[in-house]
Amino acid sequence: MKTRSAAVLSLLAGLAIGAAAIQGLHAAARPPAYVVTEVGIGDLDAYLKEYLPVAEASIKASGGRLIAGGQDILVLEGPARGTRVAISRFDSLDVVLAWRGSDRYREARKIADKYARFRSFAIEGLPQ
Image 1 (cartoon, rainbow, N blue to C red):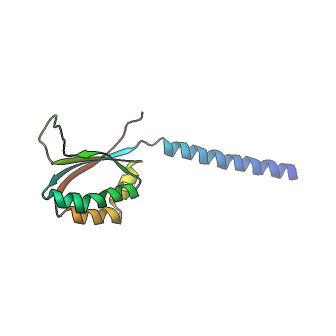
Image 2: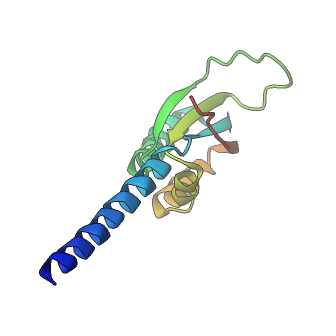
Image 3: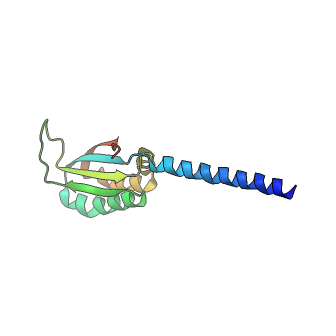
């Protein structure tokens, strides 16, 4: 009887470990997400001093990172819509949505809306 109970417990433990491993692999296979933001700035000094540090902190706190940004924009097609562009990378679109709904992001936007206008979108990365 003890042997049978040990075998059943071992089987259940193996199933649990296997399920956890499969779930981990599935989560790891999700593509990253990128947020692209075009910014039209009215007051560059205030934007850089008051908003940018708070915005970067909110991105970092959500697990994202700024991977490109600045004023040197080479427009290849269509009208330029901003004076700066920023691209941030996050682990998934779900993380992007959580970041956009966070208190830290809302606080940053209260500052930003005084100095700039934004156009942002998020896109899933392609499998590599």
